[in-house]
Image (cartoon, rainbow, N blue to C red; front, top):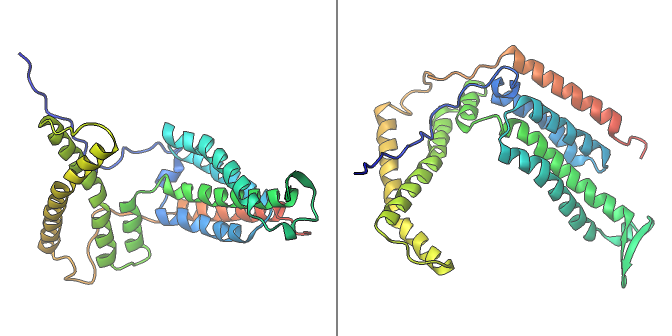
Length: 275
C-alpha cells in the first residue's frame, strides 16, 4: 500500500539565510549601494570612449564577484551572456552609424556601396560597453538587495510616506503569491487529467483555463490583504513603528566613500582628456 505524501511548500516570504561576513554587499544598507554607484552611472551616460566603460565594467564585476553570493545561473549570465551581448550589441550599433562621420577612419571591409569603417565599429562597441558597465554597476545592488529591504530603508532613511512604501511592498508580495497559486492550479488540472494535448494551440487553451481561477485567487488574496491592513489601522497615523530595522551604519558610509573614490580614479586615469 502506498501512502500519499504532502507536497513541500516553500514560503516565498521567508527571510534568506544569513550570509557570511565576507559577502559584505549583503550586509550593507540598500540605499548605500544605490547612492554609491549612481554618480558613476551618470558619468557613464556621457562618456564615448572604450577604456572608461571597460574599467567600470571590470570594477563592477570585481565587487560583485567578491562581495555577493552568485548562483550558477547568475554567474553564467554574467560571464557568458554578458560578453555575447556586448559583441552582438557592438556589431549591431556599428551597422547603424552614419558613415558621414566616420569615413575618415580606416575601412575594414566593403559590401557593394556599403563600407564598414573602424570608427563605426569603435562607436558601436563604446555604446555596448557603456550599457554593460551601467548594468554591471546596477548588479551591485540588484543581486544583493530584496524589495522589502529597499522599501523599509526608503521609509526609515529617506522618510518616504509609509502609505506609499508599504502599499508598494504589498503589491510586490503579490508576485510570488501568484506564482504559487499558478503552480497549484496547474497541479490540480494535471490531477484531473485536463492535459489538452500538445502543441501551441493546446498550450494557449490551457493558459486560458488558468485565467479564471487565478483571477479568483487574486481577488481573495486582495481582500485578505485589505482586511489585514484595515485591522492594523493602516493610514490612520502619520508614522508607524517598524518591526524590521534596516540601519545605515558606518560601513555604508565607508563603502560609498571608497566606491566614489575608486570611480574618480578610474575616470581620471582612463578618460581620454586630450581627445
